[in-house]
Length: 418
Image (cartoon, rainbow, N blue to C red; front, side, top):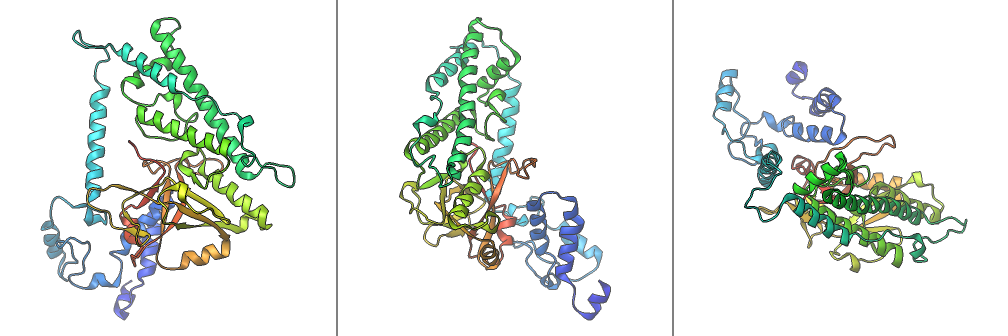
């Protein structure tokens, strides 16, 4: 480094790679985190850092200090604000709202968890009465299980070889998972009602379910692996389940829709693989040679989307960390106080892998990760898929530095927490 300094050319690219991806990145297992480290260091490891007054963030106070002694640099650091604005770290100011909301949520959950479960003498309803009412209300709304015999001819359409189309196979697998969840929900609701009445023994699982109802949480017996990942409270979770069943039933009875609600599925990666397989069988191209290229459309109503021949329309995603311009059809800065925005219908076009790699090299695209929940973390399954991360969407962006969106934590979510 000293030799490079004297000759006047520091290897900035090498420095970024060694420190971000080898030194620190070598200790980080998630590729999205490694990408974030690289985006952070790119702001500091560049030739402009040697210039006095180089802006380290949009905030006026943060700039490269003048050349001087170590004591002078320390004095400069001591003069910086004690309370850092989120923009110092490349985040949008809305990140402060998210952090405070999460802190308040955890605080309230802690208070609720230590509250007594017994009702006071002046309470209008006892806890067991509340749980009984909730169980009866849920039980009355649980839909019947879906049946393959009700399928539309196009849903499980036969291939020339005599098999079922790949999307039909995927639907059948998802339908089995939802039917298993509906069966579990229906049976446990009936058992809980009988246990409260004293007709059956209150097992530890039913007791967990009873306490979860009082706290508006999804009972563990309804959680993974029976259900899909979800952070919603109980009432919202149940309403969301009904919407998922409605979408799957419409697909079953009316045939494949114009646009698919991908967040509805247990295994979204399976939908994408089956969609590519449909194209591969139609064009006689090996599926390993195909990839998806995402093109957001102007359609905000999925029912009005244009049918596609070389891929699928998908919808139901939420952007976090940025906004969306419908007029320019690209990501933009978030509006103040707006934490999430809906992404319009996206056309997932099947292209050859060579075309996909060439498109990725073109400027003006942000490689946006898609997660099932806002937790943004999961475990790696034996199949090689994450329990939370789904895939990347390449979204249009007018920002010259795509690291700007990486530092802001821009990502797509399949569902919100409320």
